[in-house]
Structures are given as C-alpha cells and as structure tokens.
Length: 296
Image (cartoon, rainbow, N blue to C red; front, side, top):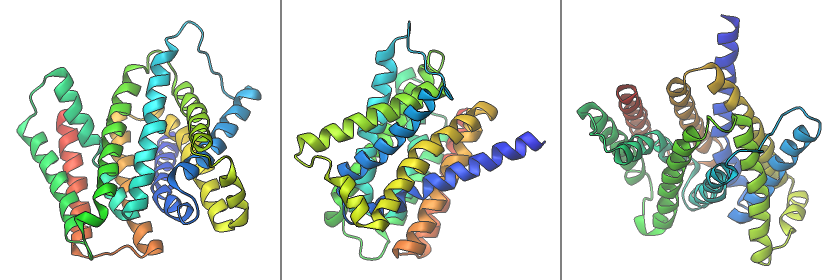
C-alpha cells in the first residue's frame, strides 16, 4: 500500500513538472529563440545524465545491441518533437499547447490501427471525435482567435502530436532491447549534441548560455526545463512505468500534464479562459479516456 502511494505521488509530481514546462518554455522564449532554448535545456539534461553514468549511478550498455534503433527513436524525440513543441508554444499559448498535447494517446491509437490494419471500434472512433472536437472548441472560440495569425503554431503542435505518437510506438518496440534509462540517456545525449550543433550551424554559437546569466528569469526557466522537465521527469517516468501498467500510467500522466499546462498558462501568462477552455479540456480528457480504455 505504501509503495502504491509512492508510485502515484511520483506520477503526480512528474506530470505537474512536465505540465509546467509549457510555461517555462514561454518564459525562456522571451529572450531566446526555440533552438537556443532547446540547446540549453538538453545540455543541462545531458550533463546530469553523464554525471550519473560517470559515477556509475546508472548503467548504460550498448554492446551487442542495435544502437541505430534507439538513436532513431531519440532523433524523433527530442530532436524533432521538441522543436515542434517549443515552436508551437512560441506561436500559440501555453494552455492551447497543453490541450493539443493531450491528443498524443489518440494519435497512438490511430497510427497503431493503420500500421496493424485493425478496424477502429465505434466507441474508440467516438472518443477520437470527442477529443478533436474539444481541441477545436478550446481554440476556435478563444478570445482573439485568428487562424492566419497562429496557423504556423498549430501546424507545429500537430507535428508535436504526430512525432510524440511515433516515438511512443517506437519506444515500446525497442523496450525489450534497451532499458528505460538507456533510452532516456540516449535522448539526453543526442538532444544536447543536436541542438548545440544547430546553433553553431545557424551562427548563434553558444551565446544562449550568456543570455541565461544576463536574464535571471530566463536562466531559471531554462534550468527548470533541463533539470526538471528533461532530467527529473524522465527518471520519475521510468520509475512509474516500471511499477504501474503502461496504459494506466499514460492516462494519468497525460491528463495531469494537460490540466497543469492549462492552469499555469491561465494563472501566470494571462491566457484567455472561458467556457470554451473548460468545455474543450473536458471533451479532450473524456475522449482520451474513452479511446484508450476500449482500445487496450
């Protein structure tokens, strides 16, 4: 019973922290562009994971394994996925991004059905339609909605959902070869190298780190994104999924992440709030639960 409480506590903490990353990204983006934010974020995570490996607090074994598989998964998340996420947050709002994020489990169901050529049950189809309707309501009826002004942001968020779903499926397929810690270690390593390389190619160099010291609020936001959002969250996630059934863990975390992202955006960023926000959030969560419970 005590262990169960610890597992749920870990799931709640991890989900709340990850939900706050939408707000953290919004703050960091006031002085940095998306790639610079990601370079700082994943460099912090990479250094922390390397420190754990150096002191042998975690064990990473690649020998005799198909490393290209875990490398491909890590390229999708974070190298592609977090670009879509951060650019989407930059061009929309934290609360909108959080609501769209909840569509990832829906995308997993759709992609899996297409790959395995399985028919989708009517209740699952209804759950998918319900979630999509919730996203539309929360966005279209929001104050000052303009498709032209945010079209690019919504496209990035769609990219976030698709790549997030593909990564989830790939991660499941390679779980018998690579431990959760090996997968997250690879993600941090590739993310740190990839985004710093992109900054060098773009002629930005390492100026983003100086900006973090120049603007304390940006530095704190980036530190939170790296240490909590990319490092601690994945450690807690690995612990939760090792103690709780994957569907149950996914459902709990996605819903808490979405709720935290919406509330933090409204409370700290002044995102618009009205009946459309509440209705959209309820429909999305209900749709996700319906689609996943029946599709298990």
